[in-house]
Length: 267
Image 1 (cartoon, one colour):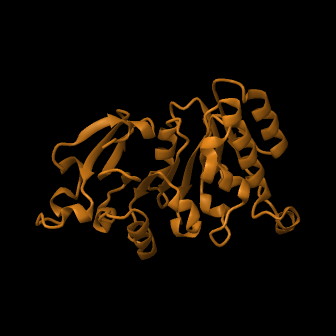
Image 2 (spheres, one colour; image 1 turned 90 degrees about the vertical axis):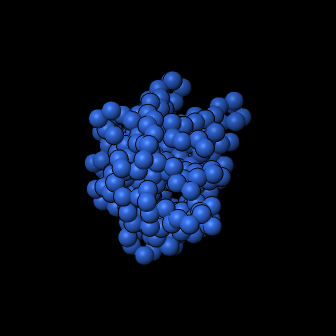
Image 3 (cartoon, one colour; image 1 turned 60 degrees about the horizontal axis):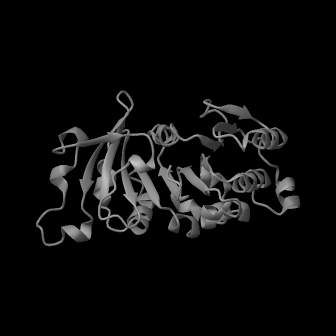
């Protein structure tokens, strides 16, 4: 990840390749905390399964140049949430500790599990809204967030509006299509519908174009094809259909290492 403390969101349905994309984004990142919501998707790190163990591990290693901690939540009962006045007090506390740590990438699997009517606990929102300032008083970089979701429309309005990078895997669900049409203005929804397995759209806020990509796990490269926004195609007599379909047949395919966000196209 870059050190401007940005937020990336990876959307995908089951078996789409979204978890592998998230892993790829942290392959060469030295300081990572993974919130393994389902408890079985991540094994490449030190696994802890209780808040006391997480506090101990982070307290022991947070000054180190490199660590990779995987937290597997036990889940909170309704009574615990009510007593703590939190949507999910376990997730809230881990988020607060990550913010305090600073200079770290926080990867959250299945983010929609920690939203209630589109609202999140303030400890997590601190990371989304001003994670770049975490550790500023100590001269440290902030907190980069990578979040994975299957239900983007369940995240409310505030969090999606603050996402810097979107990775969108295939879907034909009308609610998903409407969501991305609105939040990633200018993307051709037919490009989303035409994606093959393991392909995804990369959209960066403020960029001059978007990209259709596929990570090649054998070579460690990303195959990518630049796409114009719909409003840039107006008057050109094309709907872009000629360059859709199988990624390998889309003309000259550019290749870049598939290691992290900064390795993605920078138009």
